[in-house]
Length: 118
Image (cartoon, rainbow, N blue to C red):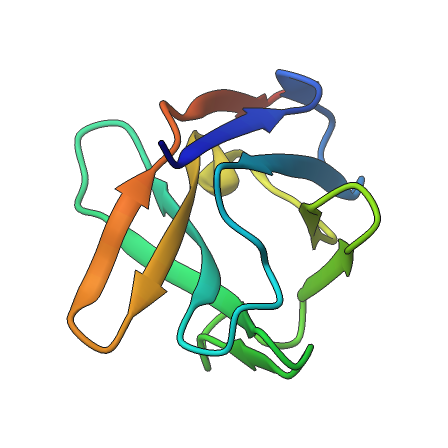
């Protein structure tokens, strides 16, 4: 059974870098048909795809967030991470990690709320 679990601080201050980690079990991040995404949903707003990492380590970012987003991984731990720099209160959201394939995102973590506030 594939499971994803987000972890990280629930509070960030403006201008800081938000860092989250997704721990994956039941699937290998290096299996070629999958990519691993970060998605967020601000309160009262829609879901926003932020970026993804492919099985070969290649990365893809939303154009609107590309300048502030960095996705990395630790294959020895089967984890991938998100860093979002220069955060503002508008970055307050529930952050999700998910697995994707050619048909869409098939497994999601439960999400973690990150609040940006001074």
